[in-house]
Length: 156
Image (cartoon, rainbow, N blue to C red; front, side, top):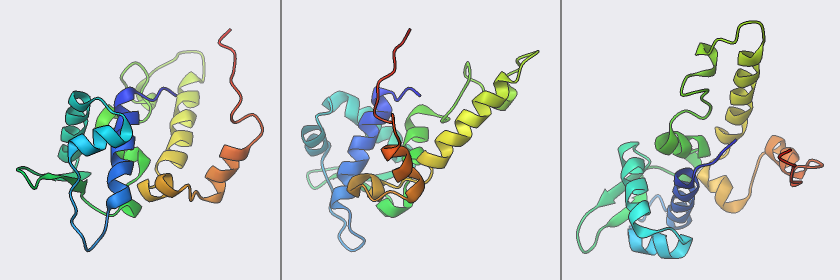
């Protein structure tokens, strides 16, 4: 799986907004603060925040008292929500849905479907709150701690 800079930075921005989120306090965070705290280039962040706003993941207010905040609780926004808002579908094969790609004489399409299902099982079930605090469910914790999970593989 390839995680684009856009998706990675978008997750960092969302995590920063999750850090200050409160149901009762509508505190706004400026893009400059997010960029500084997360080490994201400011111009790149502006586009990311615009796309997250269009996807109803963040809210914004302009002006001297303006900034950004999550549109809903970090417990109700998944990692998959952020990735889809910024990069589109979780798994695409040549820009198409895995089930729409034909591979005559093989079950390769089934491999791509299984990959998508696997990514969904992780990314749709981790919220911003869990990503912020590392409070993962048993399935994800087992994957993180499985033998070889952190091992690098050769590209040969």
